[in-house]
View 1 (cartoon, rainbow, N blue to C red):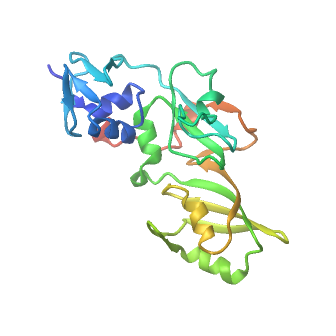
View 2: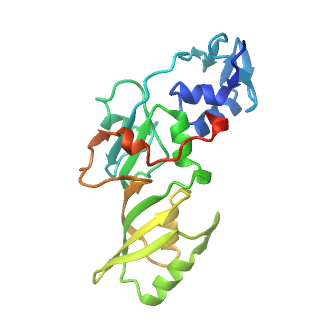
View 3: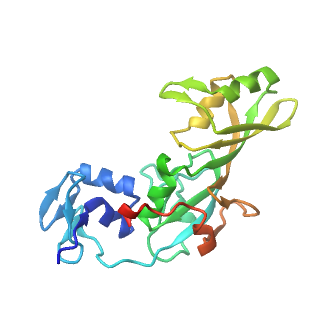
Length: 245
């Protein structure tokens, strides 16, 4: 009996990348099945019978043990496993974790806080894709004392270069003479969207800390530290629909 699956799902389950990144690898023509290039997302293969390669290297067909960690990413690290510019990467912070894990989503170079990492592509897909509704919470320090009038406008959202953006929640935490702290909750994670959002109101971000992803919280972790997620932690995230199991 043939047990064919979509190529991107096989790559994700093998810990190659998140489902979204695996789709990009297929579209770029970097995957072959039995020596033939594959570049359509609907293409399928049998992971037990077919020879599947990425960039000429055969992927592991057996399912590796799933690993899930929560990392406190410090500022000054890129959220990739390697960097052509030679900058520090989050891979440098998790060298004690066995096997290959990759970041779930992004946290830009200047930002800090909670970053999930895993070798489970399906899990990464459920955390990142907007349709699953996993929220991300941030503590944000902006330059300048934000007035009540501006706060009201912030809560209405703003039109940015790539479309309209409105956080799920914006609450003022603390006003200082030259700065203001906010708690911001969002679903979508467009590139530097929180920074661009505050800048559009004339208040550049001075510090941005991701404090929660779904039901996982930064809590007392220190910069550079990581911990393994527990079964209870994982239950805080949506289970895959029956069609994806």
